[in-house]
Length: 364
Image (tube, rainbow, N blue to C red; front, top):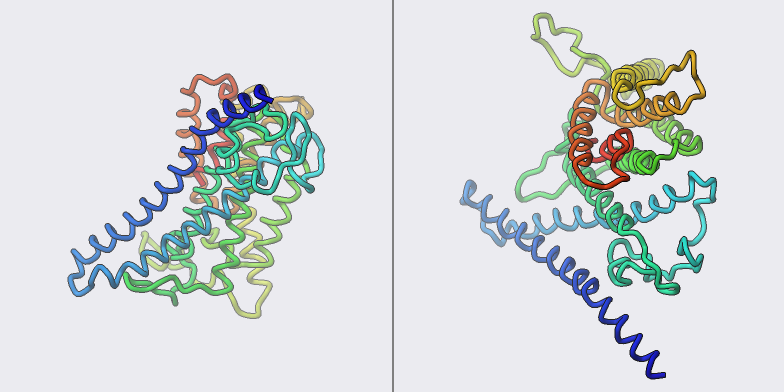
């Protein structure tokens, strides 16, 4: 009995640093939110003296609420992606309750809280006490941050060029949303989650599962046909009346919202086609670095050819979302992130394609 009590005391002491870290993270986030509200209000009053700081606190609090909402949703999605990335390559069902991969015991609901559940358990299973990889909270944090950045900026339309011009915000206002905007944000976060899932699977050295590729094709390609506003930017390079670089942009009628579905279908088809062609082109350019021996004609079933196909699919997802014009910037930024990851002394980070794949959702 004394031995059991002594072991429990030692276990509690081991948990304490992690639990203290969890509490510090929560308090730090609250303090950072309060600092953002107060400092941004002070900054605005400096250039707009007719405002008072107290008048601007509520709108800035709304910013914090919006960011926190997408952060929590993203962390929860990241928790689910951890399951998807582990189970799909093994052809396991992604449905059902989470369980410890070592002892197979079902995880309690309180242990499944993103980020904080792992910290509260000190990175160990509650039942078998074997360690749980720190990758789980890291993925949840990264997915949560990317969701928060995408959701909060798109809700205010800071990152949505040409997506309507009827909504205007000022320092005293809060975002005005409608069904189209919410649908577009949903489309983009689904694409972002898909990019994360593909990147993490490829980071582990596994080929992209056909089920995940099919899901991406249905949601992204079919979603754009069902919701034309998801194009955001046109497929054309210049406007119809832009001789010598002078004219209108975007081209007039590039996203017709009237009853003429034939025009819309042509625009969507060309938008998707140009994105997929760009993905194939850039994949062939990058093949010299990631899969130099790939040959789709002479060795269509080879491992290097499979890597090339995965590379095409990986690039195709952000290309569909941002358009062929901007995908080159995404690839360049992802390559920079991948290079930084390559400087880390971890054996798992040696695969160049894996580093590039997991950098794509951050760059997107």
